[in-house]
Image (cartoon, rainbow, N blue to C red):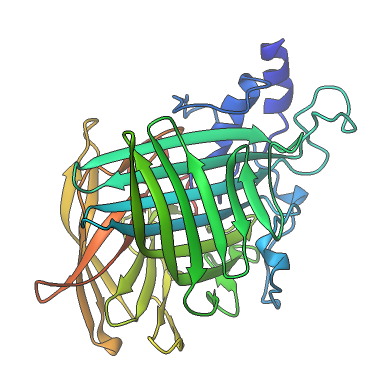
Length: 393
């Protein structure tokens, strides 16, 4: 039965290029397990690629006004989207942590559903959902992570203007922001996340181009500085924590242009109140795509859009994982026109995701002239043979 279902739906499920983390492979794995709604880390055959069907989805082809809170909800006409929290936390005694929570939705397109008989079935779903949760324990240099999947049916996963969830991992909108509650056997997060400044519309009023063709774009907005506080439970101990967080929201259907191998993405919160987001879309030749971009948010909230010529990113140290992949975990980040010459270092090297795909996502320190000037998060994708050529932020 499982093989018959897999054969049937493998012909229908699209290749999800623009998801951060090769969601198509997660979809294939989910369908193979049929009714599975939750998993620990899974190992996948990365050659089991499925055909794309972009004609089944809406595409982002130009600016439009974003509306809140409505645009906090899911956009089911598009192929993929995500709700992405990262942040740095500190306990009363000075112990430090990083955290990541990401909810992904991957549309199946057209009349494709994860149900063998009828779209009217309560089990039918037109999307697959994936969630990633991680805590970086800086003191012990431990990276704890969990991955979950659910079909978009029976209320197992979803996103409205007021709640984003996958089973009991939930983000609820509050009067001041959001409340995140998610965990596993050995760690748990219960955090209040409150924007300290207005929403930032990335690109052209939220229209973020990532390639030369119509549709090589996404809707993209961020809350670049959020006060965060609450409880982090780890190894049976409970810590009262506070710090800062970052929220990225993005959706689209065919974001990346041809020849993009991966990306290097920086979300940096500086002690002087400025927030810097820059990303390099990396070509197969290792150069920066002309659609690389960034944003500098001043302490007073003024937003400066950065084109690819406004900043320089250069790796200065690599960490080799146990499989031999060399990850550029330390960087120089320069924005000459804004007087920024920064060094970004990992809080520790081994902040590596080993779920359905591998990528590096971790807490970083920001220095200038050898002195600490901020903290943030760094994401690296496309450095392994398994995900090369299939990624897209």
